[in-house]
Structure formats: structure tokens, C-alpha cells
Length: 151
Image (cartoon, rainbow, N blue to C red; front, side, top):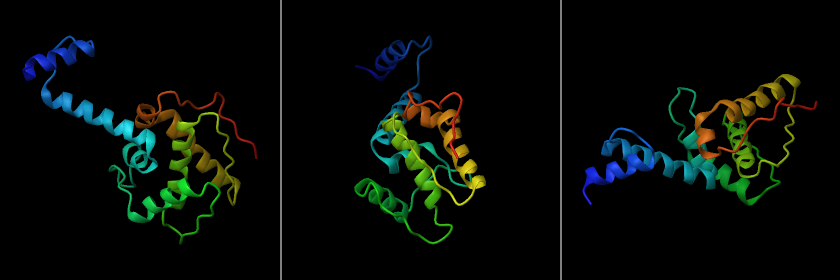
């Protein structure tokens, strides 16, 4: 089958009215594959769905990969790392990933102050409600209406 015929078949399957270029098809397939990998791996999820402080796609260093491996293997473990090493961000991303895999999961977020709890709760709410890449990985995941927090 020629590339042109294959692209026409893909366009028909996607209910597109115009032929699709091979480049676009490859990008769509690659994005779908990355989303599928992200459903099964918290590291892939973090890199697929979230950006770093510069706005670029997140690329996890070894320490964060090891953190996710630890959280996978030790469900009630204690995470200790120096300040500003990304513990909170990675744990919050992990919470979103866990909720995507089990929306019935209940999470208790304990922080040193109410302001920190609100900030971290907002990160979770915004990731679930407004991040299109989180929606691509976990289309069924929705923020509760209204978003609830018990202090």
C-alpha cells in the first residue's frame, strides 16, 4: 500500500475531510504512543504531561527517576532530600498519576501551613482540571465539583 493510500485511510478513520501528510500522521501516532506509555509509568507521565520552570517539557534527572522507583516499590515510604530538590513537585505529579490510575483513591495532603496546603491543592486541581496532556493520558480523570478540601 502506498503512503498516499495509507494516509487517506488514516484520514478516513479519523473522519478527516482532507488528506493528511505523513509528517502529521507520524506526530499524532508518536503523541498517542507517549500518552499510552505515560499511563503505565510515572516517569513517562511526568515527562509527557508537565513542563519545567522554563516551560520546556520536563526531563527527569536520575534522582527523580529513583524517587519514582522508590515510591513504586515502597508505598508508605518516607522521602528525605535537601531543600529545592523537587520532592514536592515530583510527589504531586505522582499523586496525579496515581489518581489517573485509580480515580477512587483518596489522598491526604499534609503540609506545614494552610497556605502551603492551598498552593499544593491548587497544583493538583489545576493539573487535573486544566492540563490537556493529563487529559490525553487520563481522559476519565476529572476534578470533583466542587473541589473539596478538609482542613
